[in-house]
Amino acid sequence: MGRQPCCDKVGLKKGPWTAEEDRKLINFIITNGQCCWRAVPKLAGLLRCGKSCRLRWTNYLRPDVKRGLLSEYEEKMVIDLHAQLGNRWSKIASHLPGRTDNEIKNHWNTHVKKKLRKMGIDPLTHKPLPPPAVEPPQPEEADKVEEVIDSEGSEIVDSSKSDPTEIVNNDFCIDEIPVMEPHEILLSCDEPTPSSSSSSSSSLYSPTKVLEELHFLPSFDSEIMMDSMWSDDFGGLELLINDGDQRDYATSFEPSLLQYPVMVMDEDYSWNF
DNA sequence: AAAGAGGACAACCGCGAAACG
DNA sequence: ACGTTTCGCGGTTGTCCTCTT
Image (cartoon, rainbow, N blue to C red):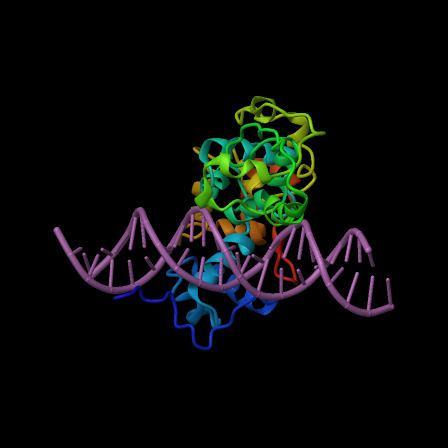
């Protein structure tokens, strides 16, 4: 007996989400909170499976999702955490507030892997890549070999070939690239460098950042707050959205909060301040 | 300017774990 | 204790965009 599919696939929409679908999902979750994902599409009037709704909300619509390129500091964190945790993207993401596992995974596969290889570092093992094979291929074989390098050298390494010795020789030519030792690129994650942490993301307001700044609240924990936003007895999201009274109340305790703009949903259903 | 190639990223799929009855 | 349901994760695919020829 097989698993029951997460949803009845007949008549369900797939592919990119439209603004209208986003609006429906956001409205539903704002009104009802996150409940059983399986029931969400039906209740929200969406022709999507629950899984798709969860993914869309988690990765793109959630108000605390930080968008845009990873900062230098975030990228270094990712590299460092990947060295410790491997492909546990959700664990890595949990160390980077506002970033999703999917986003980090994509960034890793499209940017970081290449960058590490160019630096002469194996992105799988985080160890220096050994020099390429010295023996030149036979003239007749040369084309074939080049083909293999082209198709595999820039490609994701099959996880089944986890033995690094099987993959390194087909990777980038590192003749002209100085090899860096892992310790030269791995940073400790407990001391953010001021320059990097304030680089690309510093000018942007992120909801998470705002939450982190709410330190005046007793025992404040941004994760708990994000959880609480969906509970019945907490108007967190309303405060973040546009509740003037709540905001006045909060700023009466902490006037510095006035520096933060009020969070609103744009006409294109993205969150803004 | 048009076509093709490659890159980037959003979304899907299948599996395992956790929760629940 | 066991079967079923639901959720979350990681790998993979599909589509759109940009760059190159």
